[in-house]
Amino acid sequence: MLRLFVALELPAMLRAQLAALQTGIPGARWVPPENYHLTLRFIGEIENWQAEEVDLALANIRTRGFDLTLRGIGLFEKAGRIQAMYVAVERSDALTHLRSKIETALQRCGLAPDRKRFAPHVTIARTDRAAPEKLAGFVQAHNLFRAPPVPVGAFTLYSSRLGKEASVYEAEVAYELA
Image 1 (cartoon, rainbow, N blue to C red):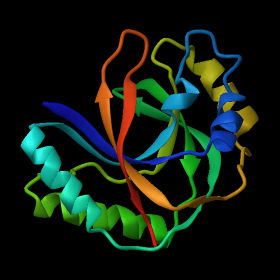
Image 2 (image 1 turned 90 degrees about the vertical axis):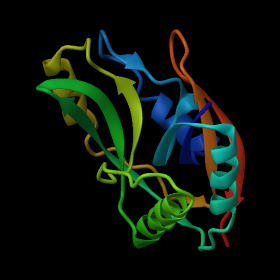
Image 3 (image 1 turned 135 degrees about the horizontal axis):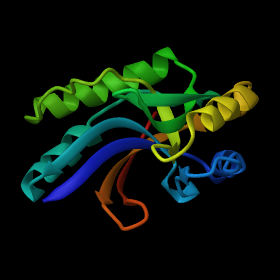
């Protein structure tokens, strides 16, 4: 069994900008910069033969590259508890189009539709042990964060292994955009 997801890899310059935000919140578990990515579709655990079909389906996607802009900081809550802090992704028609093509391709090879609403973001911290007032103050202090646009020329199929401190992500296949 493989645990897979499709994502956009972030360039080193952008990962360094996000890593510079990692300070001032006791109890936050900061995501290692090498794990920063923008998930386009979480697949989950599938059999090896299914992974081959996923690879073929993704390899047939044809669409243009585009620019990606990160702007603003936010928090994800679940059951009244703040679970994670993220940097928001500016919506674009090109990003939505790519996400739609990936979803269609994965459904055609037999995967169930993704039931989660697509909310493009880059998770920078797990915050379930951090004080809510510290998190609110951090978001307020950094809500004007904006990174320069970066070109997106590919999307990637990743495998994921759960680790003790953080998950370990490995790029399996990169798919070039036109």
